[in-house]
Image (cartoon, rainbow, N blue to C red):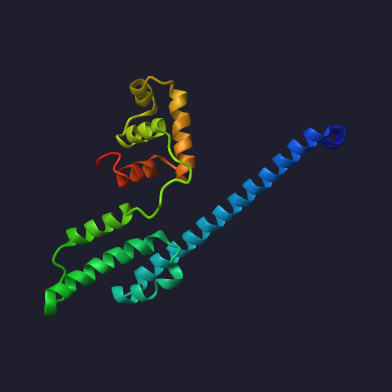
Length: 186
């Protein structure tokens, strides 16, 4: 009741600010719901993929069942490994044997490391690029702060900005991004 009274007695500018805050709040909640649904869909697809993979007698059976499971990250890895296995068998001729599991592993790593994004919509500042490089080199926030002569809180802010700009959740994804972009060695 008091909130409504305060709103009713607020001027035009106050009402405009509150309306903008309300709109952004609704948009934030809508975004969270959309992302939650995507994660849920991906988790369900991954569970179905694992079930399909465990029940299948042959890899070709799994390959034929992938279309409805495309939301799972496991599907991309499976396809990369399956393509490598097919290529090895095709080169082996009639023996139908896999010559190198190392090649399959390299193929899976290449798929995982592949650059499937065009980069951030909002460009990274030179300082953020420095922080990203140091994060990828396994430095802690405290070490980065000492190297760059910054406060540790400033480094934490840069890391949070990197996660936001790149749409990532944690340091592991930042390291992967830095390696893909050639900011550091693997």
